[in-house]
Image 1 (cartoon, rainbow, N blue to C red):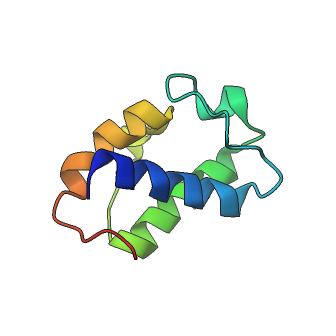
Image 2 (tube, helix red, strand yellow):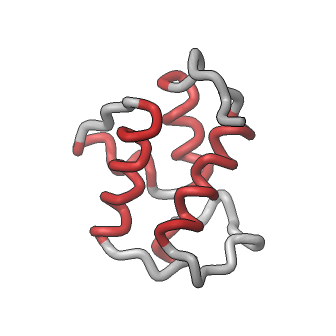
Length: 87
């Protein structure tokens, strides 16, 4: 997957976890928690969705890499490079 495809996947996951949030103005450089009403369980839901959808294992010590859209895409790009984009 490309970085843009990964970004769209993350937006899709965020939209399911927080359906009342407006994701259209999400700033890729600002922490998700500073822009959205996400708690630690919501964050874990993101990790679990990635595991379920793409069999990506994200160790707890790497969670800090998932704080913003930019860092999330950067972290996931090598892990998902061989994954075919969702239709």
